[in-house]
Image (cartoon, rainbow, N blue to C red; front, side, top):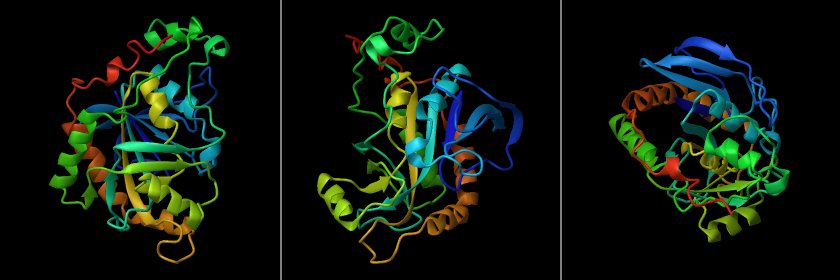
Length: 277
C-alpha cells in the first residue's frame, strides 16, 4: 500500500473516495491524525496529516515515530511525503517542485530512531523491525540513497507529463523550528550545500527506512528562505502558496498513484540487511 503524508496546507485529498478512517494507537504513541484509507485510481492509499487536523502539531513535536509505525501496522510499504519549503538555491522559484535527493539534519531534540538497544520498546510482530526491537538490537542503517529511486523516477515522469516546473535533485536541510531560520543560518546552510530548508523532512525519511519502506519527498518552494528576498517571512504566505497549488497536487497524486508499479524494484526493502550490531 502507498502512504501519503501531507504537510502544511495539505490536510486531505478532496475528491478521493474514502473507504474508511482508522484511529490507531501505536507503541510509540498516537499518530498526528487518523489514517484515512481511500481509493485513488483503483488502488488503496493511506493518507495522514503530518501536523494533524487543524494544524495542531508544530514541527518539533510531530509524532514522527507513531506516524510511520501506524503506516507499518496497516501494511504501507511506500511513503510519499508532500511539504512546503523555503528556497535557498537561487535557481528555485516560488511554486517550483523539488524532488529531494539528499538531506542535512540540523535538528536538536527529536527521536530519530526506533532502535534504542537495551532501551528499545518491545513490540509484537514477526517482521524484522519487530524482532530487532524485541531483541534490543543496535541498528545502523545506510542512508547513501535515502530516497527511493523507483519512486523518484515515477515522480519525474508525472511532473514532466503535467508540464510542471520541477527540479530533479535537491538537498533538504531540516531545522528544528518552529521559528524560521535566520539569514546567517541560511548562509551557513547554503555553504553546506542545502538547496531548500524545512522543518519536517527529518527524521521521517530515516524512520521510514528503518522500517524498510520506500520513501520519496516532493517539496513545493513556498518562498525564498530568510535573507534572500529581503522580505519578512510569514506562515500565511506558505499556506496561501500551497492553497494555490491544491488542484495541481491532487492531479499529481492521482497520476503518481496510477503510474507507480505494484512491484518494488528498488533496494529499499533490504535496508536492514547487515545493519544490526
